[in-house]
Length: 80
Figure 1 (spheres, rainbow, N blue to C red):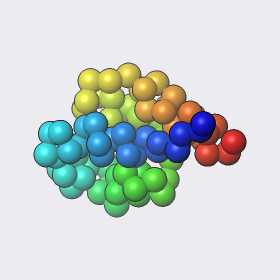
Figure 2 (figure 1 turned 90 degrees about the vertical axis):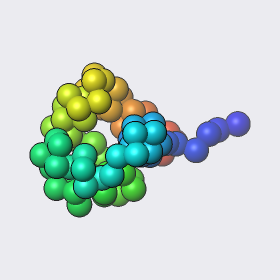
Figure 3 (figure 1 turned 45 degrees about the horizontal axis):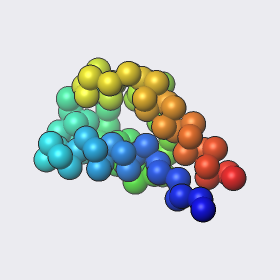
């Protein structure tokens, strides 16, 4: 039984934004990226970059590898 691959943007939304009642706009201002970039990432239309992983990690006190590995796992499962 295979599971549906989870994009790291969904992880951002479900595990970090919603529990904190944090909007894309407020996060974008806080980490210095355009809200359109974060929205594309949140909705799975773009992959996490090293720069974005670093910014998210600084803000949410995670490691950049958390975001980058989530993207790599998504890519692997999506192509399987």
